[in-house]
Amino acid sequence: MASQHINVMRKKKISKAITLIIAAVFVMGLAPEKAELTINNKLVPASIWHKLVLPNETININLPEGYSADISGEYVSGEWQTPPSAGNYSLVVRNPDGERTHTVSIFVMEPSTNIDERGYLGDYRIGFYPKNTPKGFIKLEKQDLKMKVSPSFAVGQFLCKQQRSTWPKYVLVSEENLTRLERLLKSLRDDGLTDADTLFVMSGFRTPFYNSAIGSAKFSRHMYGDASDVYLDHSPRDGVMDDINGDGVINKADANFLYDYAKKLYRKDSVVKGGLGSYRANAVHGPFVHIDARGRPARWGR
Figure 1: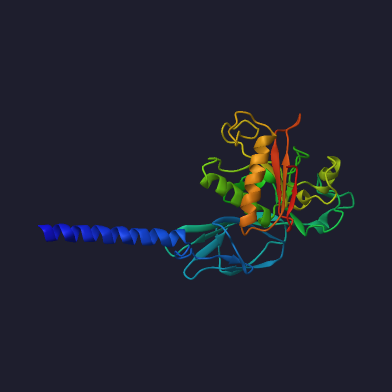
Figure 2: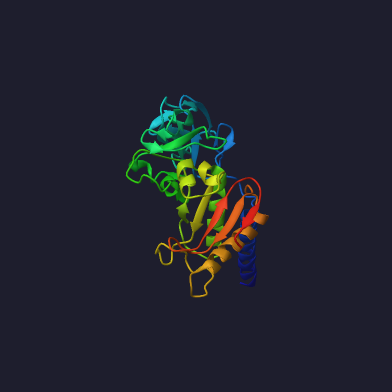
């Protein structure tokens, strides 16, 4: 009986040790990686993502061995020729068991060369860029607004606040800034500071026309879809920043808390460098933070 008890105890210890080793492997990041998907030789960084392409462009889709893909229901393998005009499509990738592993919104953009002499694309006013005009813009109809651009954000969250009744609309979002936004939101959730499934985007893309009309910086990153003014609005969801610092009031101290948190996170993280600003409330909006991916650190408002 004693020997049986010893054997049982040994088995329990071995099982516990194996469990701890497996847990350590995952914590250390040594677990087998999920099969990677690349488009045009660039890694798709999340299971839900997006890609900006132009009409009549060939894109290379590199699938893991045994995986399959379709674009809006049509099987694709290796290469896909984009249509000759702007439109939006969904790339779905499945593993050998038929399970969905990636969903990528493919936005075939309206080329910026189609902006007319008035600064319009159709009935939508873009204006003119002071420099570095983007190659194109995502064309959106009402039914496209919920298309995902990353795990926590939909493309409609980044629309410019102009011509609300005019369709189609045009917008830009940058992969680099979405990476910064996603990293911040994930860290806030992991640290138990929020249960929010997204950040509220108060201002995302701005056309040069709108950017000038509100008196914003001439070369604002908002015009390139590379900046967002955001805040947490989850508990309660009431259109203003949550009391994230827990002091019982909602004011610039909450924006400062989010700013300080993001600053510390981005300092030690590997995401692209960018701008970070803290803003107080005014008669139009509550406190918020500005986040952009300009490629170099910039700090203000704190």
